[in-house]
Amino acid sequence: MSAVLPVNAARIDPAQNRVQQMLHAPLLPTLFRLATPNVLGLFAMTIVIGYDGYILGLVGADALAGIALVFPLSMLMLQMSAGGIGGATTAAVARALGAGRREDASRLAQQSLLIAALLAVIFMVVMLGAGRGIFAAMGGQGAALDAALAYSNALFAGALVIWFTNVLAAVVRGAGNMLLPSLLLVATALLHLGLSPLLVFGWGPVQGIGVAGAALSTLTVNALSALVMVAWLLRREGAVHLQRTPWWPRGSLWREILRVGLPASLSPVISNASIAVATAFVGHYGTAALAGYGVAARLEYILVPIAFGFGTALTAMVATNMGAGQATRAVRVAWAGGAVVAAITGAIGVATALAPGLWMNLFTQDATVRAFGASYLHIVGGCYAFFGLGLALFFASQGAGRMFWPLAGSMGRLVILAVGGWLCVRVFDAPASVLFAVVAFSLVVYGSTLAIAIRLGSWTR
Image (tube, rainbow, N blue to C red; front, side, top):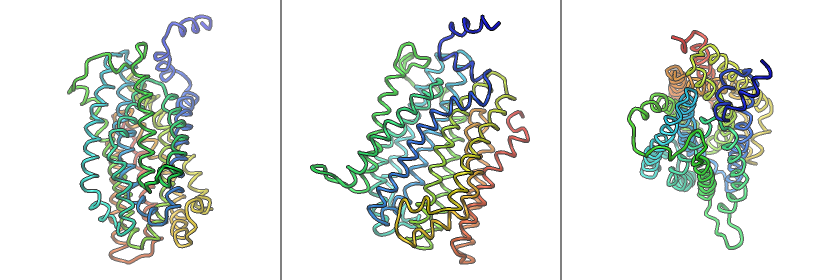
């Protein structure tokens, strides 16, 4: 038997090899093998998120406060394109390849890009047309509002670039190649580290354009990444080929993507609405509180890429196993991935809860801003394990095509924040620390809801 397996394996093309490994190879080693390139690549994204905060912190507290207003909406677009529609695309392509349907996999890739184009236009129109009103409603005013608009207008004018880059990466991952998108994340992050301060502050003959420069740098490096992935997906020998079939909308394939993609996209809508609601309530305590919260909460946006690194592997593995009728193995994959992500995010949360200066001191020297941020991390950091668990199980649920409970968990988080925040600010005039405790409780509810639902068999009913 041992002499036959290598011969058979040699006859299987690389794409089919990847499918068979997800179906039959040892679970944890396979998960780590798939996730490691993603985590390394997304670690580069983590550096970029922190680096942009550092660069804009040099501009001033108003810039930090303005970017805090934009982050929920920019991250909404990122999470919808990479995690919502992107995750649904990864799952759909992986299921098609697992069943040997290469033509359908290529068609699904095409349709996902058409969907991305439509949603990118919607984001661009809404944010360019109503951005000022949105940020003002979130508590933005004066110089902070001006900074928010400068960054937002530049970023959302190029929404198509962000959407195409993330959905193309989802197609590549659905084909089983976790390495290429990760290498591109590292390469473009390195480019961004030099380009962002150049565009923000200027140097020599280059005139700096302020906070908008950071957004333009993001768009530039994403465009380069997209071009490389298009070239990879046009290879004739590829499992997925963008030109294998004619381009036109196909209703059945849109439904296959959107039946998972729309609920998956609604979940980050609700999650980022939760962050926007929390931001609005924190604004009640003043600009320093808003800036401190913005810096502290930025850590959560760093936890998201960590979860995403494992989550994309979870989506592909769960989708492949569910498509092959291996529901029991799919559930085991979900629990293994959830435990790993919860352990990582929980460790980061506990470290920053015990020593918030490790994070806050990187971004600001303002004592008042540091104090508000430290208070937030003291209270919320200990609950980041639940946040990571919920994110991991969200991606696993995409692979299973079961999105009701991820939506329920996200909605529970939003309701707790909206009601609890209103009581803190409007009824009891409570200190900021009480509002932060409400935020912490909402994360516990989010992660616990998904875990309990899967434990009670929601995937197998």
